[in-house]
Image 1 (tube, helix red, strand yellow):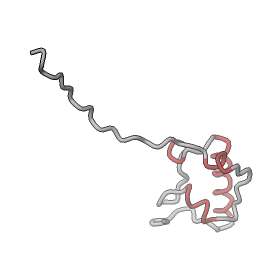
Image 2 (image 1 turned 90 degrees about the vertical axis):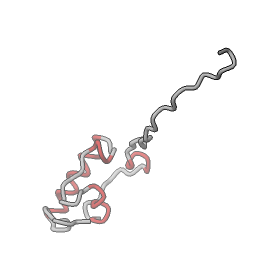
Image 3 (image 1 turned 45 degrees about the vertical axis):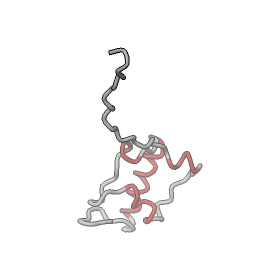
Amino acid sequence: MADSEVRYLTPPSIEVKKDKYCRFKKSRIKHIDYKNPDFLLKFLNEQGKILPRRITGTSLKFQRKVASSVKRARQLSLLTYVADNLK
């Protein structure tokens, strides 16, 4: 019994999640332009709703700026309020 090797079960493979980061802080962006609808589409889902912080990883300060700039772009009809297949 002393010659036998001790074998352990391999742990189940766990998918490693990417760390969330604020792309605005990383790129040192201070102003979010509401006149750029292509950039703002990254923060909307297929129905046109604003994605939450927990999904996008933006900080609270910039999430507020993103939300206000999306709303401004909607008022100027640069973005739609509701869409079936936005992306």
